[in-house]
Amino acid sequence: MKGLIVKIGIIHYSLNPCGGGERLCLTTMEALKKEGCQIKLATVEKTDWNKVRRMLGKEVKPDEEIILLPFDLRAFAIYQRLLSYFLAYRFSRECDLTLNTHGDI
Image (cartoon, rainbow, N blue to C red; front, top):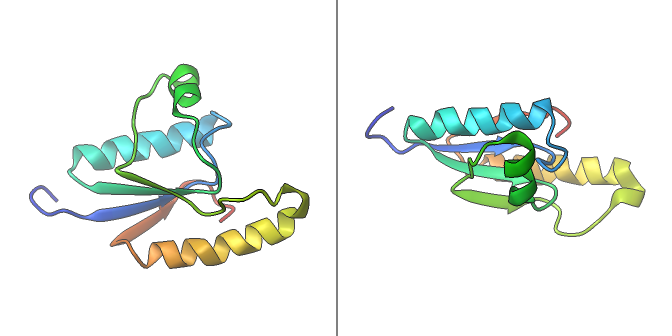
């Protein structure tokens, strides 16, 4: 892939819980960036990068972060997931390849 700019979309519900799935997402971004890929991350809430760095010890940021839901629908979780699905589909059309490192979207 060296020399060819590939836009990779990564969808992850939220990096803020700082668990194993979030470590997977960061490691995936890290590996793809090393190969010269442009990373576009889609989440449903803004990432607290200071917390992620503190908790997971990684400083890997995407080239662009898209917040799929810029408003809070926590009281209507089923609708939040459904809306996230449609927004993620639209997001995926902007990328050469889309990876889902969370599974819910």
